[in-house]
Length: 425
Image (cartoon, rainbow, N blue to C red):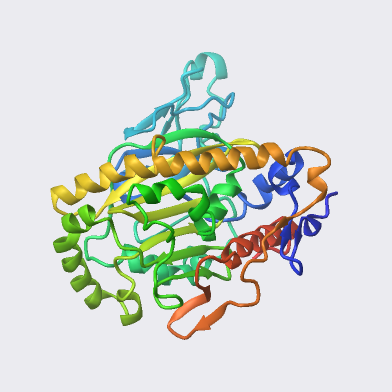
């Protein structure tokens, strides 16, 4: 049996290439990590009415997220109990039943088996339908409109799981009374690269921006030669939380054309935020935010838009990225259109930043796959031992660039990989 502790060295702050390339590691983390964490599955605004549903994945498990007829959100494994066929093959919709296209078994939005073709003739009425409903994910909870589910019935509450990360999420998600809504449609694309490389970057890697995105500075999307602001520790910092989540906060000004378009709206948002948030939180409104909720849910707010995304694991080498755009309901039409446009241009399947990142992740995994390279670890020591506690900001913080949040991700990964089923919390 693999000694998972040997893959992440807590003292030297190193991570083995096997974490990203080894099929054994990948198979184990599907249960050890994805089986025992809270995983993002949908936003409440996607399930506005009874019968509304979306389909998603929890690790390698396809799921249906639906609002039943009495208003409860439920999550089911999207697999028929008869032969395992996917019972829902569309991304979203509204329904009262899900019918398997293979043999016709039919389930209601409570997950109950309600229809079996030839029930009397072929089963002689002996099939106990109440025992063959869809497999339901045991835990479903939400925070600020974000719906999470967990296969672990004994997992801590979502509130406890988010822990210190809630403070930073609230800066963005609780700044106005209306909250946020998801715009129609989902961007989906395939990339070479292990899912963890995307999650770690969004959770604490600002170091790559100067090199990987250098040409974007020439376009005015980031200040040339500058990938962080001028207020270290105050508005320019990264956060390592105690649950493996990471946050990047950057006081980088928007390009002039964008700043002019959103100026009036941002002033109104700031006024609301001062009434709703703590003073230390409201001072951060209007910054660039990038974060990861462990293990594979990230967000980015940049150049006038907010985007949620999932790094969907598809093996050690490939992954899928699923991305949603969000807007505040009270945003003027021009601001909403700007948000939609800027996400498409920057962080989307055709986005100029996204192309840089995806290229890097694919080559990272490709070049680490050889027997010799796998013997030598990767270095994650930047900033180690130099983070600070701030009485007004939760977690351990450090100005960018640093890797304290990134390595915190792998500390959490290591702990989950090592935990026995009996000793989980």
